[in-house]
Length: 340
Image 1 (cartoon, rainbow, N blue to C red):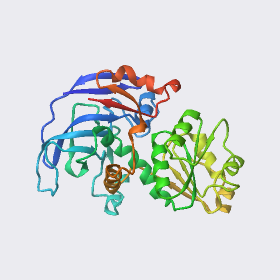
Image 2 (tube, one colour; image 1 turned 30 degrees about the vertical axis):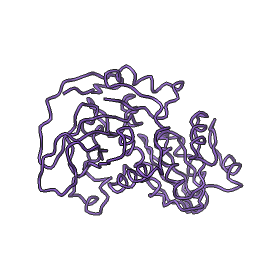
Image 3 (cartoon, rainbow, N blue to C red; image 1 turned 135 degrees about the vertical axis):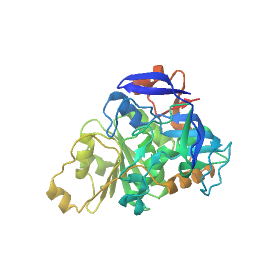
């Protein structure tokens, strides 16, 4: 079985792996589509937390079940089903899992990060981590996990109808955050350094206001576009230290701040400013099984259209040659996907 391994930062290689054998309670999935994520880009550049080399990347996956090894687990899967894969392998025994927080399990293994992922011809995955759809394409299935990150962040923020929400970072995760903020009935303001990304998000109707960031984002910038108000929710999807530390200065009093992106370092803030505004600071990690099910239903019903998101494609064979080009600003990548 062929796979693509990130041997070290900046170096992909094709490798031959042993054919996957059926394990009880798991299914073998033939990989059809692999979404390329910010996590993959950071791993390629050498600045991804929770990461070791060498590693087979790939955690945004759409595929087809080719084998199921039963283990008394109740399920409705069958060979030939088109599926999305939930890539968060939780232990089921820690305090977080006992409390239902399986997305931040103390012993979590995210495929493509902590263990080898889906940039391969086949993958073996626990049955309870597989979500099928009879209507979605492989392209759509590969984007479910990306959307799940956005949905979980919006749920963490407890976004309500009529609120003004600032989303910083107009990449795929920011797109997902905007999508679900709009579905909650919020007014969305998107901020990014890229005008083309902002134009794209406005064109597909996921932002009401936008700010092209050319320096430090200031309160006045927000009040100018939000009718004199500050946002009650700020969700930062940049993973940029300077952006994230500045967010404490951009919230309305009583507001909620959610960090979706992360950086390797300490988050520090001026406590009197934090205290006087009575801010709530939240982290958002991964997503939950229910998020997968909700997103698949929303795409099936036509509420969410992911087709405009897919701006770039590459074949599995050509991926090692194409990957670095997706990092070039001139490419204006919204979302790149690998086809097998």
